[in-house]
Length: 124
Image (tube, one colour):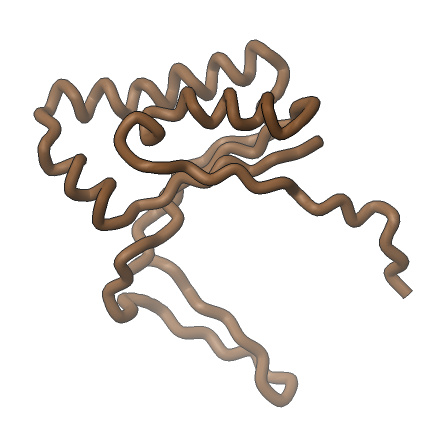
C-alpha cells in the first residue's frame, strides 16, 4: 500500500530551525538524504522531493472554462508543505516506522497519509 509522508514547515519547526547551528542544519539536511537512500535500498521509496518556497508557487483555477493563474507571493502562511516521501509498504505500521526516521520527527510532527487506490473506480 502506498503512503505519503508529509513534511510541514510551521511556526514550531521554524522556531526549532532557528536554534540549530550550521553543523546541525547540515546534518538535518544530510539526514533527509540518508533516509531517502535507506528507503531506496529497502525498495520502499517511490519518490521523495523537497518543495520550493510557496512564494514561487502558481495558483490555478478554472472559471467559466477559462484558466486563471496567480503567481506569488501570497499572503504569509503559517504552515506549508515543505517536502514529501511517497513510499510503498505493507501497512500503516511500516509507514509510521519510516516516518519516525525523518529528521523532522525529532523536532515536530510529520504526517502519514494513505494514498487512495482509484484503480477500481469507473471513469465513465
